[in-house]
Image (cartoon, rainbow, N blue to C red; front, side, top):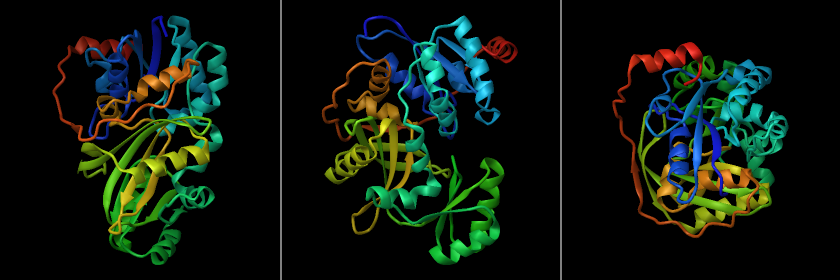
Length: 347
């Protein structure tokens, strides 16, 4: 990779529930010996990554994924008329399926990506997690999808309390009673729609793995961290890299059995007996991906290289004991920058 590459990426909302875009851009910016230009793809005109110095060279407003593939394609036709992205890295669950389905069209336009297949994306959905675990012999908590309050009550009796109530894309809450379960059901369904997932509660210690599969069963990268500080939204606000052969074995098993293609995150729970359970499988890089970069595995760079058709060998071990602590920072910019982006839809 010896030329300047233009990388389009989303996830610029560095807020209380941050997207991965800013840390992905940081990882690419800091890759020694490479020259990247970053094209930001934003859904809101107040996403901090739009205005943060050193993150994006250019930013475009994008239609919401709910507007459909036609709207996404139309916006990309405009983007391609004024810029020349080489690679696109979508960083939100909700936009991945449209990008997977638009992949061939973008490839014909010269925009590469490295994404899971549609089958891989669909079968690891939260509401199919029990079936997924049985198919690939992966330990997962019992999960069910529900679409109304009577189904919720039925599954609540079956699973017992406490239980976890989750949205199909984001957000989750622990319900300790049928009333709390109903409250979470109404709150999350109003925001994210259906189905709602109810999951058996497992008490324990939370771990996450950020990784990258080559699509042929090889684990290119994998970094594990233990959550040290968790927000009320369940987001890691602090963590530390750890090495545990059981976590790596479970991760490699997942990649080998599913032939996973692209970046991913495994959300794990270690129970009182020391056994690990896969709580969720996210089909993209996590918001804490910069910790993996700092620990010695630049997953954003490797993803870009694979998308560009380069051979990438499995990375060596990473450094344990590296911490991240997320913090809030007042970003100062002039209103003219905000007005420019709001009016033109690009900056």
